[in-house]
Image (cartoon, rainbow, N blue to C red; front, side, top):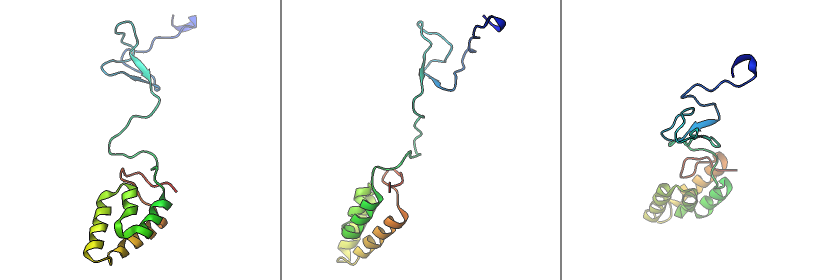
Length: 125
């Protein structure tokens, strides 16, 4: 029933409302085996390459670990940045510990500026 009858008009074929996302291979409004073929969207779709949210790693813990054990790159390993952690460890071994100054300064910078974890998400406070 359309118009003055008080009924609702059917949704045009192939279009979904803003809260419904079609299942794979289906379009909303087109029935297949007696069902509408749509599901509710509860979370935004994942977009690869774009980190979402804040890291579960703490900025304070990463900074303190890097200040105390920065010679071994422990703060970077904690953050999930294993590449930089291994480089800091190698530099410290090659320079007989003098490269540990890099880890100390890096820890201070993590505490002041923050940083990102291995997935590119900002560290939590």
